[in-house]
Length: 288
Image (cartoon, rainbow, N blue to C red; front, side, top):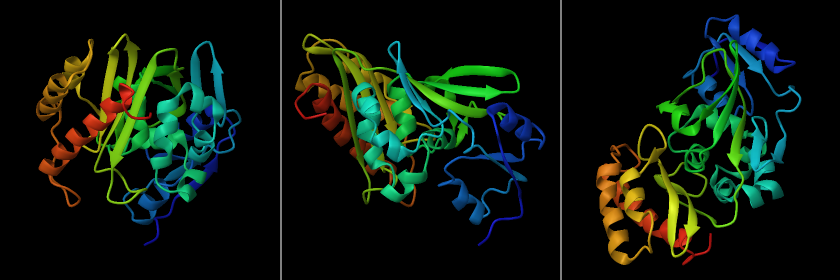
């Protein structure tokens, strides 16, 4: 199939992009990497009246690290982020997740901001944002704001972005001493969306973990924190009994549904397998 007819405009600045979006009553879409958008256009799942191309806006393709924070611009390509020494050192969870994002050809063009804005519930990066307490930088008609990841993902492909907003970057706390992370996913083939995945972050304190965040993906309409399991694993040394209790708590934390790829029962089983694997990464029993 081919897309329905649409107009095209290349934004010169962020303010110009907002102006273009504001003139089409919510019927315009932002074009960044286009790796998901082009497919939905061709299948006529999306039919905007205007595409606003932001690829020419200066500064949105930068990775900056200062004052204990790392900001990844919206137009940073996934491949560039994957090869970034700054991200590898200061945001290692994202570095661990990026090789699982689609395939090299997609990562060469797809953007970090585009993946976050799409908010596919089976995608890796939204879960990483949730695990790391990232903030999403947004520019809109009312000015600029930052939205915590906990408040950004609101439903299936639904975010805090308004129809006239532009996502300009993602801000992460840089990993400090004692920071631990874990990442794992299970997919039918490497590069496919995950049947179940888990991005986790914590702080090592003695023999235990604090500030633990377990962000599952592929199990609901948004990336989802397993808060009961977090509470059971927080604190002292994680022994087999506590880990078993946390795995059992996933039955209350997660509510996956059946689809053509996997049943809810299979997803629950895979979530338990992945939680055990990621906890071993967090505690140092397996490499991060």
